[in-house]
Amino acid sequence: MKRTSLSTRQLFKGAAAELNESVARATVGHDDAAAAVRPPMFAYSFSPAPPRAIAVAPLTGISREPSSESESTGPAGTCWVCCEGGRSFQPLIPMGCACRGSAGLAHLHCLVEAALHNVESWTTCHVCRQEFTGEADVGLARARWERVRGRPEEDEERLFVANNLAVSLKESAGDNAGALRLMREVLAVRRRMGEDHTRPH
Image: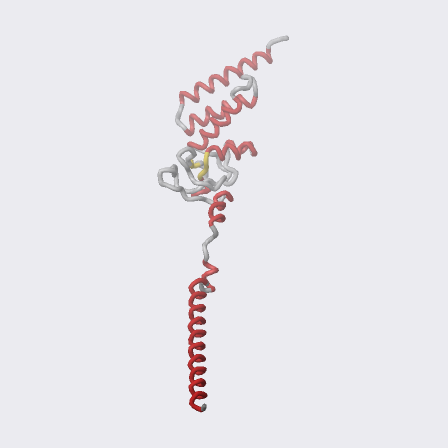
C-alpha cells in the first residue's frame, strides 16, 4: 500500500512537472510570437504614411518630383503660383524680374491666371514690383493680345494692349519687324480716330 502510494505520488509529481514545462513552453512561445508581431514602441513615431495619404498628398499643392527625367523640362524648381514643377507640355519660365530661385519661376498659364485677377500682373511682378522681361514679358503680352484682338480696332484697351505687345517684342524678343508692324497699325487707327474727332459733323 505504501509502495503504491509512493508510485502514485511520483506519477502526480511527474505529471505536474510536465504540466509546468508545457505551460512554460506555451508562455515563451506566446511571448515570442507577440514580440514578432508587435513592433517596438518607438517605431510608431517613424511609421510611413498610409498609402492613401501618399496618393492624396500631390493634390494638396505639395511639390511633386517628376516620375521620370524626360517629363521634367525648363529650369529646376517650382512655379510660385501652383507649386508644381515644369513638364514638357508646361515648362517653367524665368519671369525676368528681381525675384530669385523658385520665386522667379512660373508656368506661363499660371501667370496669365494671376493677371486675370490683377491687371498690373500683366506687366509687373506683384512681389518685387519690377516689370517682367524676356520670355515671361513676351508670353504675357501675347496672351493678353489674344484676349482682345477680336474687338473693334478703335477699342481703347485693344490699342493699349497692341502697343504693349509691340514694346515687349522689341525690348524682350528683339523682334523689331514685328514691333514696327504693330506700332504702324496702332498709329493708323489713332490717326483715323483723330481725324474723325476733328472732322466737322
